[in-house]
Image (spheres, rainbow, N blue to C red):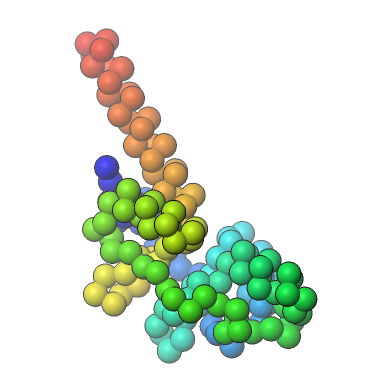
Length: 143
């Protein structure tokens, strides 16, 4: 099975971020403009949390708050879960599943390398399976 770094190699390491002092509304605008569902929250050049559409739905809308008057710092998750680029895709899947998260920052020696999503993991696994199936078919056919 592949490594987390293989996903970053194929998708790139572009990181979309916001700050704790950004309003939820402005963060939502950024999500919409970039056609993404999560932003890394960065303070003093350090990643500290993730802001997701799920956070908006559960911590703003359902609690009757206003997105224009609520700041990211008020609703962001307190713990940032990360993964090393040398961990397996299986490790990433296990971590995302057990922690109920869909976005996972990739760090090495306290350096942020990128962010992977559950969609990136699934896409990688599908491509890997296609490759294996193709090789097996060629082996069976003797080509």
